Length: 347
Ligand code: PEP
Ligand code: MN
Figure (cartoon, rainbow, N blue to C red):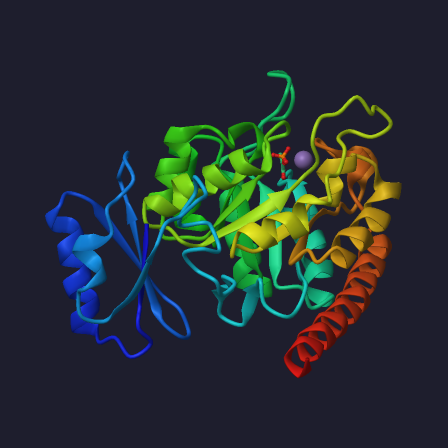
């Protein structure tokens, strides 16, 4: 159930509704939009009777939420969520490009890559210090030493750091060193990790499980939001299908569909979803054209020697090209969506 407050409802009236909800043993989640405040009621297993709320001062209407996720859905919050760190934004006008190394392997490899990312004007740097690897014999990441290198990248280049937490202990460390904490595909339904991410005071980049439906994906985001962390970025990274010409199958239709159902930004990872350098730029173009709010891209100074995911890492020149193409396409998409909105207003 959502309680929509009147546009002129006072803080005191909002507080009155919150207290009423809590007095009957339920949880209230106010969300302050540009026009009005909406208070979500969560924690109920049975449908809620609206009658105790409808006549409270400042209440405009009570709306039943039809979707299983509440915090994540557009019903609770219509305006799009924008993740902001300083001047860097995800979910706003510009396409947000998060680029860097798959794994932090050395200071040299990481700094060389960060230099290129900074030169292109991107504001976000990715790099794994804890790597979820299929084989226990594969390189598992440098751990805290890798996080220190990433922290130095921030100091030297002013880039915001995005890094993956593979478990709760890693999340504690990532929270203190990084700006955005990534939850990977294999952990999308690790519910204790999602709950811990919900208590973090940093934005969470949540990757779609490789066989997760959109509803499961959104419910995983709900786990984070219900704990109090509303800064979630969704990331499509390809799903498992019978197709074996690429590492995974990019599911680009999930981008507009997620944007329809949810106010959260959604970005696309063309690197992990195809696993092949030569398909990264074409799929990135397609995702931006489909309206993705950003991209997550692997880059490496010498991919043939990479300890993790070398075949999908872009060379520096390719990366510069990708950034230019993604920005050009995003500009066209923006002009067209603005034209659409203006057209709708005139009708
Ligand atoms: C990654 O981004 O480094 C990663 C391991 O991705 P995924 O969880 O999508 O496989
Ligand atoms: Mn990788």
